[in-house]
Image (cartoon, rainbow, N blue to C red):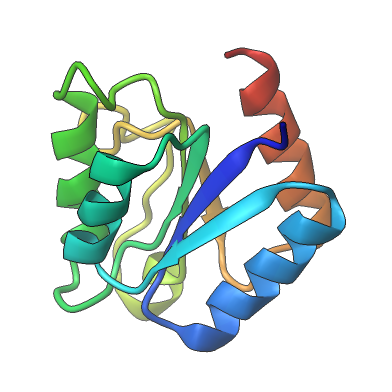
Length: 129
């Protein structure tokens, strides 16, 4: 069975880009364009990894959703790759090396994603499960 990856992003172009990259590498994808839809999917479907945007309906949706998931026994083992343009659109610089407490995610990627880097991170994190 192929590993299932949930893409949570409100930008349709980004959704399609990541979906194509992942499916070309034999991953199954699910897509949510906001946090409530992502939570609905997680409640119904097993997910092996999540690609999570930061800025959706609110600028901090992704941060708070990641924190919520990592505090929930049912979901805390799902690796999260935060994929965002927040560093380009705000004066803040975030990364897992410096913001581990606030960013409870395994990897952090800037948009637009580099396809090879994305697949490398996905494979790396799934190999640890």
